[in-house]
Amino acid sequence: HDFTSDGRPAVGTATIFVSHAHACSFPKMLDAMDAYLSLHGLHPESVYLWVDLFTIRQHLIAQEILQMEHVEVAIGHVVMVLDPWDKPVCLTRAWCLYEVLHSLRDNVIFDLTLAPAEQQRFVTELHRDRPGVIEWLTSFDARKAEVSVEADRRMILHTIATTFGEGEDSINLFNDHTRHAMYKALAAFSWAV
View 1: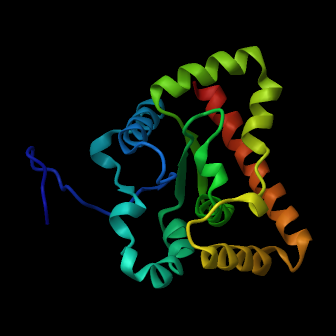
View 2: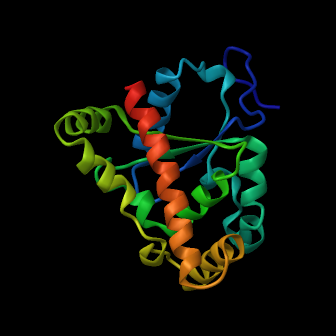
């Protein structure tokens, strides 16, 4: 096993699944997770993050992705990084919505976080226009979500249909469930900051 300079294990069983868009800044994602830990009084030495960039073998992505649901359920805690807060890239990406889909399980905690600079902008706008903030963060549509590989979209939409039923109603139902999860997580986050 690898250890940090002070003798703590450098790797361990993941305690938080980090949902983030690859197009966003990696240092900003780390800042957002650090802010999340601070906000919730979690000690960094007792938290292990599951970050797809380090855990999914990109050359075996088709096989690895099939395990995503099991990974999220086993960890039991998903934290989505909103960047930027007012137009989160993650809500425009099909893979991030796919991650939210699996966090809709009863025993999976779903939370949101922002980097400190984004938190300041978020709180200011929340006080100015709460309904507008809610609209911004719950107006996504899985039909319009972007992917780099079209086959991924088909697989994600198939998974949504398998979970929520066939046809357009399945997408509408998924969007409704996901928006509700975002709304609940947004409410919890706005109380915490």
